[in-house]
Amino acid sequence: MKSVMLKLTQAEEVKEFVNTVNRYQYEMDLRAGRHVVDAKSILGIFSLDLSKPISLEIYADNCEDLLTDIKRFTI
Image 1 (spheres, rainbow, N blue to C red):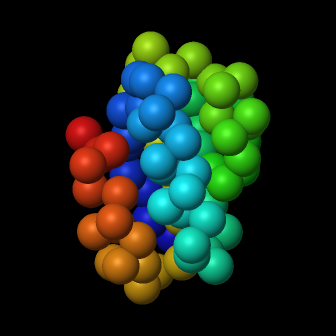
Image 2 (cartoon, one colour):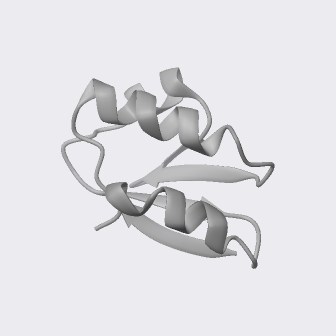
């Protein structure tokens, strides 16, 4: 499992992020405090507090291709 911190502040960023992660078969969750949503769900992401950084948890060990694609969202 890999975990990275993300910052998604604008609706356009959320849309780009969801479009990017949906191209991958990895199981992923976003965690904000005690709330956890599917990282591939645009409605789920909008239910989180996006004013603070959120944690992306990828349930795969070899996912460097995904990490490269989402680099612009990481902090």
